[in-house]
Length: 304
Image 1 (tube, rainbow, N blue to C red):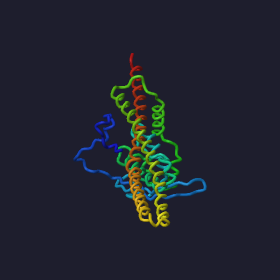
Image 2 (cartoon, rainbow, N blue to C red):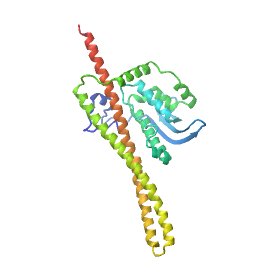
Image 3 (cartoon, rainbow, N blue to C red):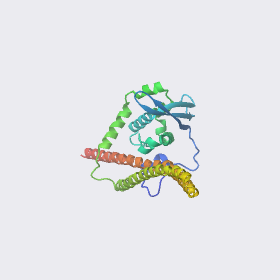
Image 4 (cartoon, one colour):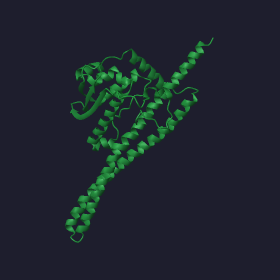
């Protein structure tokens, strides 16, 4: 989901578009380039985890160098997201992939799962880098540049004043169940998001179920080819026919694998990302409810 593009069918708040307007003649001022690659597995006596290499190239003066290379694990990305939410409670923070996406992919296709996550983490960091506000967050800079020991020490520090304020605002927003009356604009947007969320969650579940069934079908189909080859060795009259069947099964396996590759790379991650964004939208509506309620209380107190 590209947050810089808008569909005419999607109701969009004018406030959410302020920092996303671009003019055709505006030059490309991108000065922060991030790459997430080279996943590496680590095994300890306590846990097994994967780290990813993060290469950052920049021309910004506030950075001590023009290029940095660090390694981070998933929990570090999660820490960064939480820090951004604390510091910027009114901004949409790009979603992270969950710890586990599809169980079958984790257990049977570990390499595919790792690659899918790497792409998602790469997209996550680059969306932050392209955001006009989040890109200058100090925790984001430390995440990209700090050595392992320095980063570990920074994570142990308590939250600052702005972070504590952000935590309070977000906690209150999440605790709200809505106000008695919403502006009509927000009612329409909320209704749209509710319907969209229901439908996209259903599509997500169906897509994952299709992938799971396709995987089971492929596993079974792969057993038939060798069986027909062995069978042809003991049936001279049917040998050619059985070998042809085996060849046909092999072609079907390859076609199914290609189809599954398309599902896992082009469909499943995109659909699930829409699910995550719909959850973020609900949080923002809770926050808007709280702000609306506070405005009403303030006006009431000012009345003589």
